[in-house]
Each structure stands twice: as C-alpha cells, then as structure tokens.
Length: 88
Image (tube, rainbow, N blue to C red):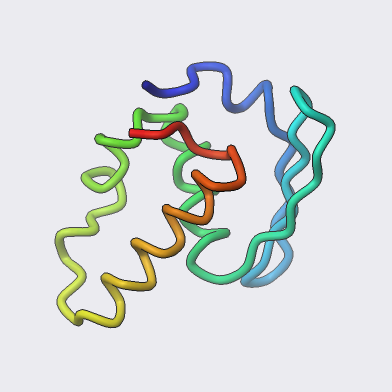
C-alpha cells in the first residue's frame, strides 16, 4: 500500500547525486546516495505510488544489465528497510 501523504511526511533535499530525507512521522533523518536517492525522489514526485507501481513509473523494465537490476533492487530494499517506502 502506498503512502498518499508522502510529500507531507518527508522533507527532502537533493545535493548532487545524494540526498537527505527527514521523516516527520518518526523524527529520523536519513542520508541517501546514488540510485537510492534517485528512486526515493522519483517516488515522491510520482505522488507516493504504491511500491508495485513504482517499477513502471521508473521504467525499471528498461534496465538491461544484471548489475543495474541488482543495484535497483538493493536500493528498493534499503528504502523499505529504513521505513521510507511501503512494503509491497
């Protein structure tokens, strides 16, 4: 299930390839780098889509190489582990 209030829940700042997100619900601050920062930013800009719809919005099906797919999967798992993306 997606978080329709994602843009209200999170304060997001991008610095180059990295980013910092403050979770207003829990008072936690997270630093995100590279692919993880890009995925989180895309999730916020897409209106906090449900995780199942996120792959389509990011055109993840276009990723051809296995290492790139692995990096994207790792980034999604990291965001879920931190509580920044909903679990499925």
